[in-house]
Image (cartoon, rainbow, N blue to C red; front, side, top):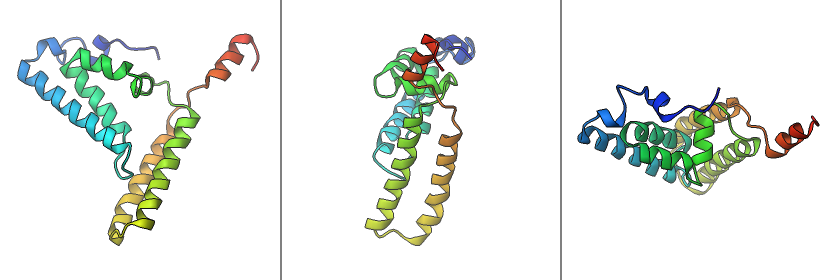
Length: 155
């Protein structure tokens, strides 16, 4: 699956930012910014995932502003991860390991050092298990070293 252009992703007609009113574009950009803020908060809080919010921000920006969409998919923090995910290229083993480790470590920390009601365990653990399953099932992006070995003819 090759990289898709913004026009291909939007459908080039109905949802194109140019065909929306200013109020509609404002609503998409507002929702995108809200989702991005929640994604950034999710980087620090164990109960909030980052990736779904950042992907939601990309979807909103795609409809509200090509500039914001291009900024999000090319910035140094989220750009490569978002564009690889949207293009079906997957994520690296290291990012998978880091994501799952941080998720479960922060959940464990929360339950060990904060007095949380027992029902939160029943709510959060299945959600964390679902997120872990999703991350595990993502395609693995080849590492740079394996790509270099392939290019040299060694496998």
